[in-house]
Length: 196
Image 1 (cartoon, rainbow, N blue to C red):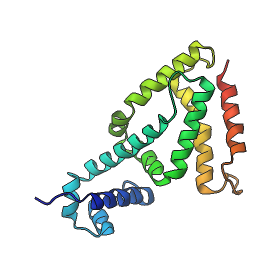
Image 2 (image 1 turned 135 degrees about the vertical axis):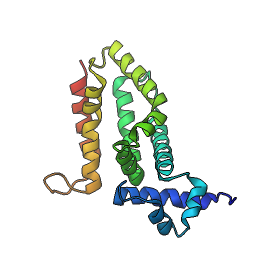
Image 3 (image 1 turned 60 degrees about the horizontal axis):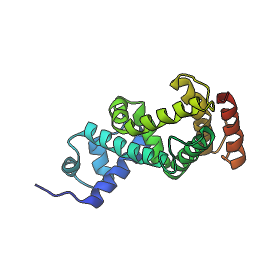
Image 4 (image 1 turned 45 degrees about the vertical axis):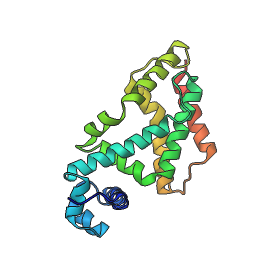
């Protein structure tokens, strides 16, 4: 049996992420991946049992990296404003510095692999965010609303702004970059919508 080559495995992961982002999940295949990596298809099966295994493992790895970044400097007992600011900054950092990974994770979350990936990566984060929200409600820093509405109000504007930033233009086609001024303005509106 052939042994694993860590460098080749990293190349495979990076190329797979790139292909999923540029060609979509439907256009992704093991033969094409092997060709792009300059290796035989048999080499891929040293690292992954099949295409589904590869996609799930890559999604889980990216997701763990993402949620690890979300915990950076965050604790459930922070004030709502400080905790939310931390989450925005961490999400901005990840999306701007790991654009391909962020895009790949988003694609995978909305695919047939999404439920399996999400189940594997969100446990600790869900628990900490639930504690954070409940503490903020108890301190009268946050209105009590269903989580789906909370998420939409809190992160919807941020992800729209990040998408404009990634494209370099707004919906009207005007040049756009996410500046601190724009970020702070949107953040303050979100706070206003959610605080009693």
